[in-house]
Image (cartoon, rainbow, N blue to C red; front, top):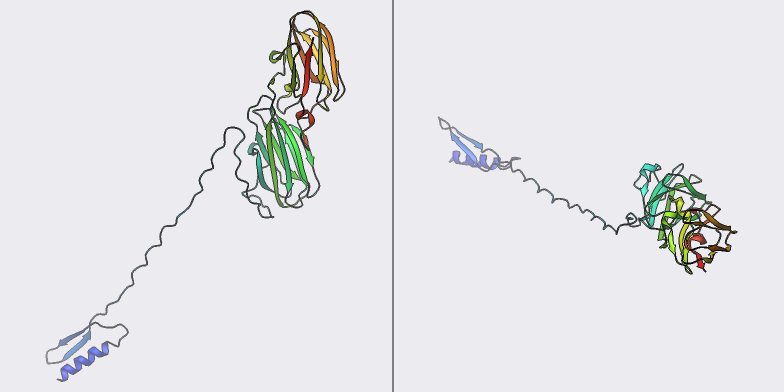
Length: 330
């Protein structure tokens, strides 16, 4: 009986240990001694937590490309923070070989002290070119500077404004060619700016006719309307040539109602390029040139003896909005 009691007490004592024993090991030694030992403890290890579900990454779908023409413009971004840093995702290079291509639309970028941003605009093909109109304005205190350069990086126009002002200008560019826009500022303001660009094709079916070989046919007792302009990258376009086929000897009168602010020149040569007559007028003047003619072909050049700008500030000039009119009468 005493052996049973001692075994029971030993098992109960082992249950109070820090690591509980699931059972007791009892051993009777020779001579009757009874030894009670707790069975080896069982250690429970919590299972590892399940791995988290894979993270889903959403990627933006590529933008749909517009029809062929000016390069695609991204959606107008939200205004960046008032502080602009370099480098940053909105920083534009000041190097011509790294110029940022843009087309009609809105571009938001940053400016800071001694910073300049260079953009390139490439017009789609067009027989009379395209008229671009831009506006440039800082967020608050920027004193903007805009410089326009042709495809050879020769300066066409440069203008600037006071603090918090907006610049507006125009460019006449030959179809299929490029111009550069260089944006900077007078002071060292650190803030974003907005550059907006609009474009319209100049409709003139008679172009190109900048030389005798491409002269536009003009009937007797007929007329034509055209623009006397100087598109960037195509200086030969400033002259317009026409061919008039005379059916019988007599008299011909050329009437040139020139666009405003253009000083007209009208010149007539024979099919063998022999000069026949020439007349000039003051700016915006309407001139008439009567001359005797014989049966055959004559070439008429309409031009100007003044220079004509390819770019400027403000709205497009009248010679790009109101065409001149050449009338042939017998």
